[in-house]
Amino acid sequence: MNRIYLSVASNIQPEANIFAAMEALIPTCKLLALSRCFVTDAIPAPDQPPTKDLPYYINCVALIETNYEAEAFKFEVLRQLEETLGRVRTADKYAPRPIDLDILLFNDDVIQQENLQIPDSDIIKRWFLAQGILDTTPDLQLPNTDQPLQFYLEPLLETFYATNQSFREDEQLREKILAL
Image 1 (tube, rainbow, N blue to C red):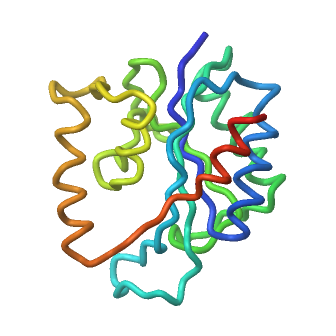
Image 2 (image 1 turned 135 degrees about the vertical axis):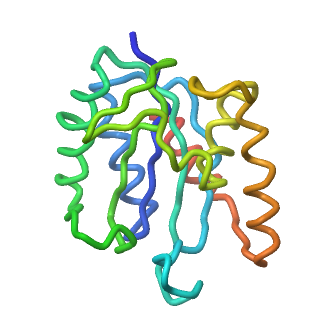
């Protein structure tokens, strides 16, 4: 069995779409753990200032086991599920989306292909990804580093709080997913 840390996010009907995605994943994997569900402001495009005008996101990290290999899971399962739930990929990587499913880690593998990079580089750029992984595995060390993930999280949180950003948790959504 392969262990995957999966980023699950949405900012179009996020509660409904995240639950639907997790429910649809049941035949392909076993849910081992689920992080807190973080409700956050949308991240603006690099040339745009932060704004409250964009719909909020819910982000969580699921630790799953599956028989799929990384590339097959990404393209045969995740991308098809995104499409089923209404995701349309555009050139705008910051556009609102009903669901966004990304493999953050796959076992302890390092995969560098044109269409698949694992570990996902956003782990050390987005506090909610690092924190989500640590919620499920507090002592995790990234496979391509000699530092615990906590080392990378601390400066991300400092920057996050320095910009007066806030978040809350959606405990009801988390409990609903865990009951699947």
